[in-house]
Image 1 (cartoon, one colour):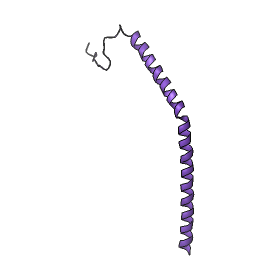
Image 2 (cartoon, rainbow, N blue to C red):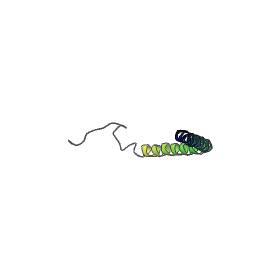
Image 3 (cartoon, rainbow, N blue to C red):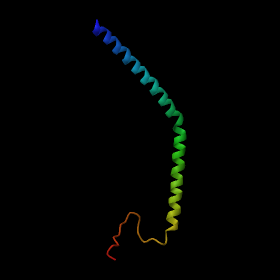
Length: 78
């Protein structure tokens, strides 16, 4: 009798967990679908702003730099 009651309690807890996971997953997926356009717009704006700022920095230091991007020159011996 004790095993039957424990089995029934385990089934109830398992069903409750499964239903709660389904409901939470549904809410999270709906929230993701609703917020996707806003997040894409923010990323696009941040990307454009970064490219614009890099362009300004590149043109400002165009004549004063003699090192190619990514090149490392050891000047400790000079």
